Image (cartoon, rainbow, N blue to C red; front, top):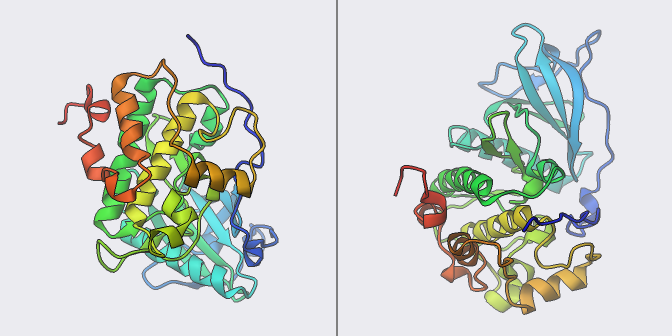
Length: 319
């Protein structure tokens, strides 16, 4: 039986209430006629003067992403401008994201890093791989995903997460809007603005960052879990919600069309049982989602373990 996708409420992506992060948006600081002078980061070769603006790709809480082209090579990139505006937290996150992308640029299914530079104003620019197929969020506007399509998506995200976690990086904001698709349907994890490099595998996270709708129970209510949480396990919870949403067409913890708010989300995520898939879901897919959406973080499988799950391995040639 075909599933009808209901329109998702535009306020679902509730950001954390951090007023300091609500930055004004500014035009792209590059111009064909008068290139901006910048100081390149050591080892980087691309500067603002090399780039020309093609289009705006999207906006976030801390910056804007543009499609740009290198004037000499004609290569296309995504340029993320993070507007610090003298905000210390945003500025720290900008440099942290650059550091994480450098560390993870060779991970499979993670957007590649091509350089960064800083303007005298404090705005930070990050040059990344341009992925031409949009996000999973925009793809969902065209209809829900079949299990076969979800298998490919799940495998790609897990390979990306496994590479990140091996490098002690917790993404902390996995959601449909942060997963890109290329023209071949392969996925790339993007947006590392709230990610964290863990000093050791079992280090706990304490900061309360990310998009709240996709947070795990221990992130929503850290005091009930000893005041901290496992960032890697939290990524797995967010993955489960992302795949669930792509299958049913709406956010799993809410009824289709229901208005989300902070109180509704925290009650649903922290005090309700995990959502159940429709009867149309296969046993393998149901098992996979249940493995991600365990209320206790220690009960969730790791990214490496989930790559061996029957749902992911079917017809993949790997076991």
